[in-house]
Amino acid sequence: MLHIANPIYDIVFKYLMEDERIVKTILSALLKKEVVEAEIRKHEYTNGRRDKISMFRIDFGAKVREADGSIHLVLIELQKTWLETETLRFRQYLGAQYANPENMIKEDDPMGYGIPMVTVYLLGHKVGDIEVPVLYVKHKSYDYDGNEVTKGLPDPFVESLVHDSIIVQIPRLQGNVNNRLEEVLSVFDQTRKDRHNRQVMNIDEAEYAGDEEMMHIIHRLLAAAADAKLRQDMNVEDEYFLAIENRDTAIMQRYERIKEQDKQIADQGKQIADQGKQIADQDKQIADQGKQIADQGKQIAEQSDIIISSAKLMKESGMALEQIATITRLPIDTLTKL
Image (tube, rainbow, N blue to C red):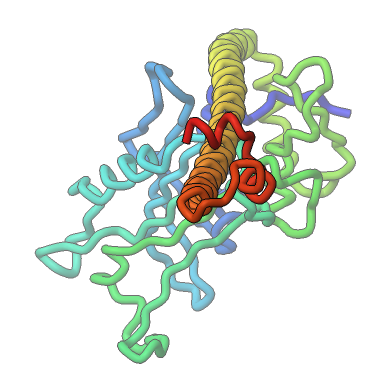
């Protein structure tokens, strides 16, 4: 079992990709084509300030051999990031490549055409619900009716304005090796990370027996693990990411507290609303009861008026008070007052 440096670290990844043989091995596996030559272009962009997030970027000019034997130049923009980031950062780097006049070919046309470009994203996080570890995003051309157009393509003008992408989800590798690319990417598989030291990957040398290109990668990472300066730089990266993790944890905990408080406030608001509804219902019941009482009082008053009017008529007709009291059930003293 070999203990190699973890290439997810920026400093180790940079050290790995400074070896042209390794670059050709990795790019050939990604492109599924033979990379004859690969050169780091002079503009290498990295997040040197590390103010928000680690994103390592390196650009290659690669000569690729096609199936028919022809060789052409391709610009490879490779970006690696540990943590989730907004796509705007990727688009900004991509825009810089499109705007760079050095990425134009003027051999066949004085106006020039852009070098065909492929963007490669090595992500230390998962993308949504996409389960495949490596996603190939390719462009195609169609006519108005949706029929694919192949005649005349690829064309330099079209290739200048569109590009293909390869997205690698490192957490999705999960020890699976089903093809050449997954074998090459296996050195990035974080399930091989040492339990006690995430700077180290535990690799079984027997898995790569007879594969000279993979053994060259392994030996390069072995050398990185033994380099004191690289280990110190890895410690710096760990300190940086620990600070980010602590910050993100504090933000997440604060967010959860606010979320819980919002839920409590919402629950209290619902309780108050329910109580208000209950009070409103009770007020309505009281109002209904008051109306019923008022109606009953009105009915009693009307009945009383009828009885009194009847008693007066009986009196005027000469009927005795005792007889009127018996009929109306009114006391004689009340009848006397009336």
